[in-house]
Image (tube, rainbow, N blue to C red; front, side, top):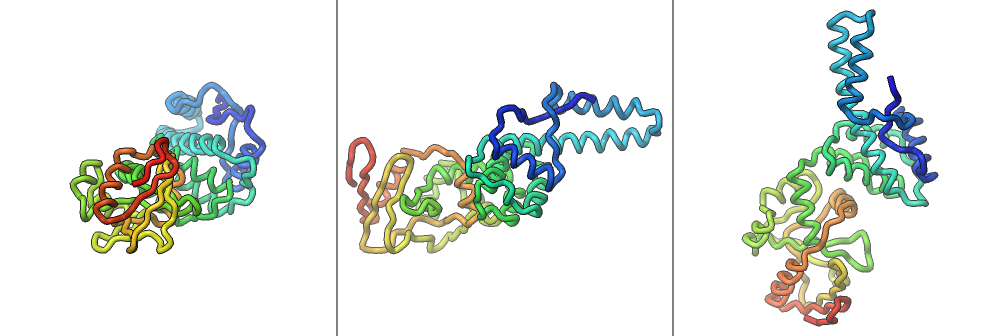
Length: 289
């Protein structure tokens, strides 16, 4: 059978080669030399012909092997696409050799069933982030990610577009979702209470429909896209009904969602009504609100 490869190893960085080597030794996933049959249907056709031509197998054995080959090849391709994405996101200081073997085995057990391109991209970023030294990506996080549906991803990405970052603490971020007070607005964005309940059940957010969450006492500088914002108030500032869990923050860091300028304008109106002053210091106008 002609060799098949999903990854072009020519020109890969040293850390990418280390990652492939670590995966091969730990999990047994092998990158074959690059050939011409990476396509699923072509690869499966080669599998089938080899099995059908085997005169030592009975009809039922051939059927069982073809069925198993179909599933095995699909799983291999899923894993290969994810690994390929990971190799493109490695930092030069990555240490893939330090990834725990049990973690890798768990990762590949989940990765074999990830067939959508959107989710493969996320899983590839997860593997790269782990190799880059992100110890927050635990096996529990992998389990949570394995349960995420397409609708959950869609809702989560919408929330990411409404999230402000802490300028001085990169791992801190604050989604501003006032679903209790302004349900109609968020419904218009495609975010409904049952969507938030689903993300809460998955463990990506904490959802409090009653009192909500507040910013730290020492109000941080916030960043929203290219804009730096400083809020000030005589009382604690409520930032809505949800906050990210550790798994949610991990997924947020892997997303690349454009921030909504219209949402910033909407927040300015809300803050003004709550007697919260807002100073924008890094936009083109230098305006203060």
